[in-house]
Amino acid sequence: MSRRQVAGRLSGFTISVIIVTLVGIVSMPVLIDALGKATWGNLFVIQSVAQFGGIVVSFGWGATGAASVASMTADERTGFYRSSLRIRAVLYVMTFPVVLIILLALLGGGMWLESVLGAVVYLLPSVGAAWYFIGTGSASRLIRFDTLPIVGGAVLGIIGAVVTGELWVYLVGQGLGYLVGVSSSALVILRGAPAGPAPVPWRDALMAQRHAVLATLTSSLYVTLPIVAVQIFLPVATPVYGLAQQLFRYASVAFQPVQQFFQSWVPERGADIAARCRSATWAAAGIATLGGIAIAVLSPFVSLLLSSFQIQVPFSLSIPLGVAFIGIGTAAVVGYACLVVLGRVSALAVSTLVGALVGAPLILLFAALGSLPMVAWSVAVSELCVAGYQLLVLRRALAERRMPA
Image (cartoon, helix red, strand yellow):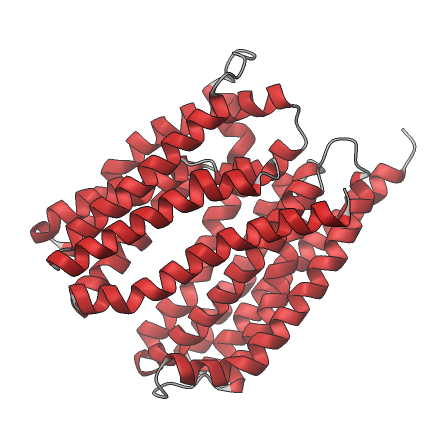
């Protein structure tokens, strides 16, 4: 792949992330003004619960599907996608009532319409094909058939919320965008595609994805634990830690194009996989280190600007979260670009379990002791353990490839 091709693919993925991020940032104050803080808070609850349910619907394809697709032939790719779509559609139907029950329990029967719409809408992205476009290196298709419909739905929903002041109107607009994205993606992938081999049996397909979905569920659980623990034990510190975590998330979103590029580049057919794994690892570690330094140095100043000078993230928080970013950025590429193509998907689940076993007790302990900086350092230790374990597995896997049969 030439430098021009590399730049084109990376810039395409970057544009997609920038568009979605900008719309998300701009929509936040607009929706708060249109809906009110309380209703906006309910929207956040709906999104969080449904997106966690979406992990079950996507069942690991969103995490490992891109790297898997990148190493397949054209016929294998469409067959792989068709099988996943069939299974995820059924999982969507099965997961919906569970998410709805949880939302009704949290929000009450007075928000039954918003709960129903929220469950329908925010489970839809898990049936989408973003990971397929990433795996095939099709940044333009990702933008046209996934990003733009989602953004269009969000804009439609925001306009509706501003005009009516109703949350359900926003959800309808957002849902239309997701529906168009999911439908158009499926049509463009499967249109004219050969029937391919017989669908993979349910049991075999789910078993093949078990490590990926376990890794995603485990990481999602311990990533949300710090803010929950702070809210329970240090409620007065929730705003400052919440803002620090939000900045951390923005940095993670900014890193996504790097991860997406390597997910499609490392496993390309005919490539020297071992050499590309090494290059991707060094590049990811370097870029993640630069990002970590930026988080550590800039968070105290950026936090003041975003909060109208009401909240400042101290260096005692920004430094450990910067260290944590080095771990999470490195693991994002080593795990989901390199280990997947090397057949070490089980290491993803084990690494997140190691991170949870190390980090979760420390997070709870230091939150109970009232030490906010040590909570952040616990997150850093957890993420470094995940990255460290994956690096060890990668080194062992590459060494085995060099050994004669």
